[in-house]
Image (cartoon, rainbow over the protein chains, first blue to last red):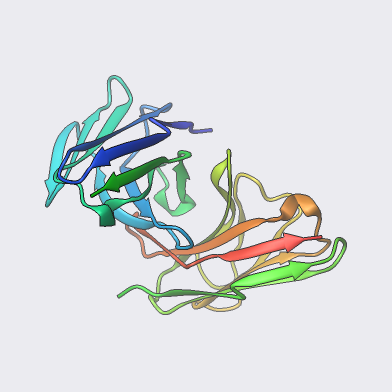
Length: 112
Length: 111
């Protein structure tokens, strides 16, 4: 069974700083890697995904994937207080219809 | 915009009782999922479905049943609820790509 580990468990950053989150997964055959954002009392919302080695940028978000080291990172530029949430890393297998395997999450707090 | 609605929002049940959690999606997605979320365990997949009439076991199906009577509706059934099933339950739908759209969750307490 796929294992997904995230670090750090929590992160506190000042407004305007970069937030950097890490995720490792156990299966090199994993398909896409996803990042979800979850605010208190809400369901997770998809932010960004990556399939190929390298990086992908969308707005203030940049994701880096290194399949050889089974590592993916998420970087949030110019962090805002509204970015305060739990960020979940998720991995899909060959049959994506079977759902995603999630990590435990990183809690990000951005203070003004 | 993708919409997944769960009911009830909160539920208190007694040990040994039957609990049904409901989920409705208006996205016309084929795939639907039930997850539970617990501190220290994260989100874990209980059951999923490829379409009306189909249900499949996820990673932690014991003690749970699922029902998919239509494209729009997917229910999670606890025939004999136990305190260990106290959790927050999330339903999600997916349309053939990998993006999952989640509902707002049901907080279940089994006393």
